Length: 115
Image 1 (tube, rainbow, N blue to C red):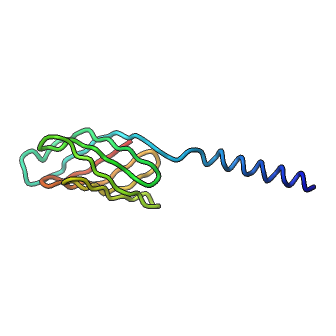
Image 2: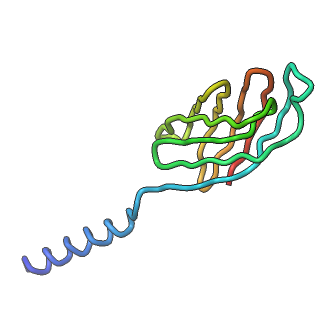
Image 3: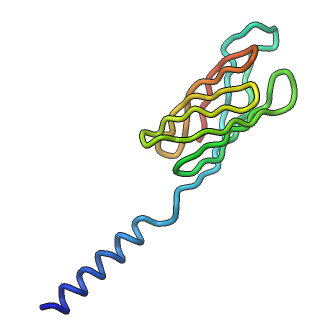
């Protein structure tokens, strides 16, 4: 009986270990849509990319005024995050295999969606 219990416990531990798998990490891409702002260039949409793991996110997007901006932040247990970098801030939520939310820069603001 003791051997049977030991085998079952080892089997359960192995199954749980396999089910847990490696830490979650993803590379996402999508679109950022400018909804308004104070400058004439505050319009249109641009590609956006992100890399994330269980606890952090890094979002990179072209800036309307030229160049790119990368914002980094922490993801809380509910999936919510706030990522800041340079002159842009992203606020959103990670859900399933994607993330979405809003952003605000020095002159423009909008929304984003990543898959």
